[in-house]
Length: 122
Image 1 (spheres, helix red, strand yellow):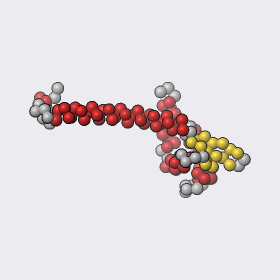
Image 2 (cartoon, rainbow, N blue to C red):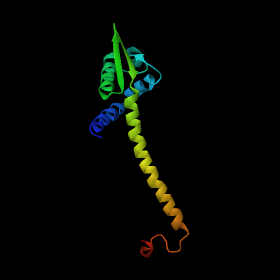
Image 3 (cartoon, helix red, strand yellow):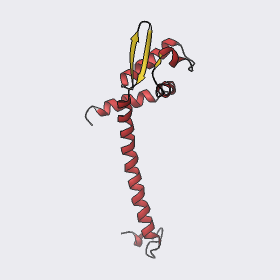
């Protein structure tokens, strides 16, 4: 978890902006130029470039400049890292809910387990 926490912070910060999420969505279909990323967004090309720089700094996007065209592509490894972190948290919560469900199922038929009865707590 060493430097991963800082990396995750940058990833989630980058994904916090709706415009950058639109860019990531577009890039999930394949590489695109900055101009292509800007098309559906109501912002200047300069603003789009700044957003691309944030995405690059987070590691979510890589770009390559050929002549005057900067082409961006998603970095799947960084996306997988964030996805893995979320999956681990979801798994923990699901296991807790499963245990709670099991407990409730076990105690539902028990006459000793009446809601609000302090003597039924163990």
